[in-house]
Length: 330
Image 1 (cartoon, rainbow, N blue to C red):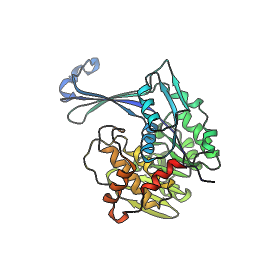
Image 2: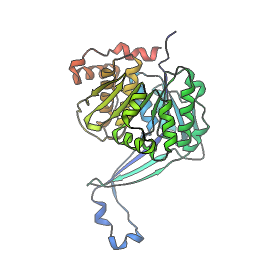
Image 3: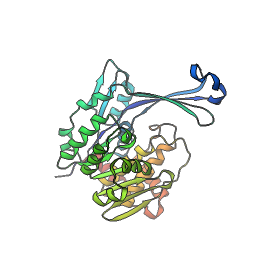
Image 4: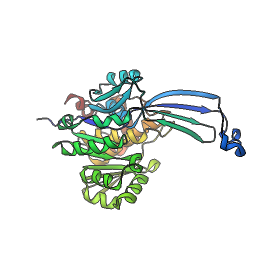
C-alpha cells in the first residue's frame, strides 16, 4: 500500500490589509496631546492579501503538488480566498464558515521610516476548537499544528499524535506567548518534528525549561530557522546547516517561514535526504519573500526544479519534476 502524501494543517486563516503612508507617523503625533490622540493618515497604497499561517502553508504545498487539507475558521467574506484554494486543489471540507462574522483580519499601516501601526481582528477563530481532525489524520502523512486558536492547537495536537501513521509537526510560533509552559511541553513531547525560529526556541526554553539541545536529543527531527542566516535540521544525532536560496529581488519577509515549512514537508514526502529537503524549504521561502505578500508568488514544478539546480549547483539533479508530480498522484 502506498503511503499517504496528504498533509493536514491546523492554524490561522486570515486576510491581510497592507497600507502605506508616504511620510512619518511621528511628524503628525503631538507628544503633549498623545493622551487625547486623534490622527488620520492619507494612504498612498492599499492592498488586501490572502494570508494566515495555515493559508500560507497550504498555498505553497499546493504549488509543490502536496495534497493538503486546511483546518480552521473563516467568515462571510471568504469567497475569493476559497475559490483560489479550491482551484489549487486544497481540501476545504473541514473549514467552519461563520456567515455572521468576518474572516480573521490583520490591518497593517507602515510609514516611510519603518514604523507600523497594526490591528488584528480574530474573527471566528475560537470556533476551530469544534473541529475534530481525528478521522482525516488517520489518512495523513503529516499533521501540522501551528499558530492559531490556542484551544484548537491543544486539541489538534492530541488528535494528530493519536493517529497511528500521522506524524505530528509542532510549530507553536507566535502563540508561544499565550500557551502555558505545560501545554508547550506536551506538544513537544507528542511531536515527531518540532520547528521554530531561534527566538521562538528561546521563548520555549523560558516557558518549559527545555533547551533546543534537550528537544533535539529527544525528537526524531528538530528544525531551527535563522532568517537570512539559513536554517539547521537536527536528526539522528547529526546537524545539517542549510543555506538560504539566493533572491532575485526582495519584497518582504511575511510568509517566508510558512513557505519554508511547506518546502520542507514536500522534501520529506518525496524521501529526499535532509540536506536536499532543507534546500527545498529554503527555496520555497525565497519565492515567498521576493514579493510583497505571502501568497503573491507562483511557480510550476518545472520552474522550481530549474531554480533549485541553479541555486544549489552542488545538489543539481537531486530533485526531479517526476518526484514532485508523483506527490499528487499517490
